[in-house]
Image (cartoon, rainbow, N blue to C red; front, side):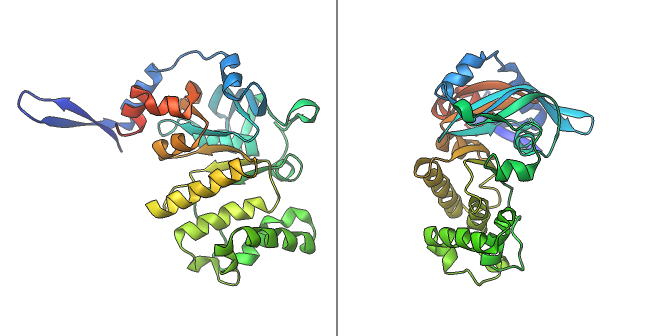
Length: 289
């Protein structure tokens, strides 16, 4: 699979396109790795982290993917993970939500006396008790169910149809686009509407933390903008903490307060989203520039 394209001058006028392979990107990204003191990572999170990962070692079965990973994001902040294919970006989200084997380290959520260790909690307890929700990649709606039924499924842990119904109504009050289609089968929705439904279903449990996996995947540009506007509102108007993996690194870094570059399951770089956007090496390897 080809990677980003670089421009190289030839002997004659004009230029030659050089295509970096995935392995080339990973190798060159590895060369950018610097040791980042935890104090700097905490500073990016305003020195008051709400979601923290410390020295996490995690993977699948006997395969360790994440190696002593440390990450901090503050309450009401957003953080975007970028990096080459196979760097372990989605594994970070999976590990937080309980989908991987944890070999070491810890994951905590909250602040002050309310901070709790959620490292080994199951995904249901993370959603219900720790208020951490995972918004999966595209195609996670139930296509033959109505929009309303999909939302009610998001409230299955409430153990009360009345409570789930009330939560769904709050979503419909917020997003008239979904309310107008509440009785329609989810399979007839546009790509952007399906993504909105996936996000909204996660909101039924009123989470504090949203783990968002590839929000732009499979969407037309006009719907990508709509989805990021929704996430912006959730962060800045409702105070949600957002940890995101995004294939469109430019869009993700433009959105996020903080950016981490992951390489081979470790943090190679960390800075504000704007600083990474302006970094020429990040631009060359991940932003197509």
